[in-house]
Length: 273
Image (cartoon, rainbow, N blue to C red; front, side):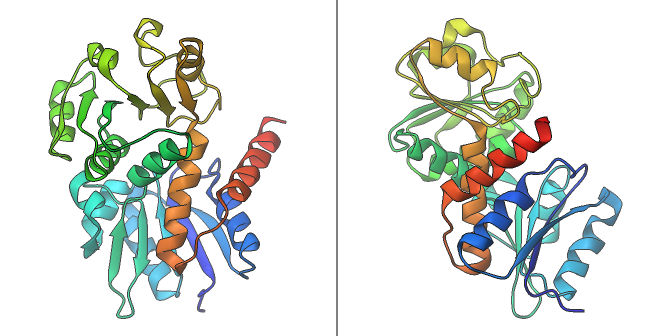
């Protein structure tokens, strides 16, 4: 059975993923009879599932936790951000069955920042966290002209590894926020809680602040930043912008980001009921 009109997200757990709502809204907006599904797959079956999707004729895969590092090792060809970050969140298939990997998290973050009014070129950025998402963000910021990227993480060795993703990146501390123009949280701190990854005393009005967390949509991190006069961008915009990049890789088309966001917001509303 060939599934040439189907794409999917692979992860575990996957039930709460917003990706089906986002991508199916994009397909409808572009008048394409395609569909996007979620597949819960354990780590031991990940490789088998990717090849099954390829052999079934699916046109693309989104890869979410905990499989992004495994996807990096599995694909034969990688884009520059995935190569620098060691992480893949998007797979598409060549005519000969070749697995192509990309990471749209970094550009998705940068696109969301630009959409919110920030400038990447010449910026001084502080990235909180050092995992796969952080590494992709650091790589994208570097490729798009950031002047300085300070990585703040509890484990210094991981921050040092993440700093290798861009020439202008380095291990930093919270004190670097004072001179920063961009502040990005890539950790899960604040997800479903009122916690913030940094003290409210570090925020200032010259910052543009993005939180990759989107549950809740208004995190304590963003509230504190706004109270200090900073420009803020929620994590849902980052999710949407990286999904737009995935659509462009899979089918060469650019969907309307607002349509995708509206679908995500509706899905979140139903989830809260």
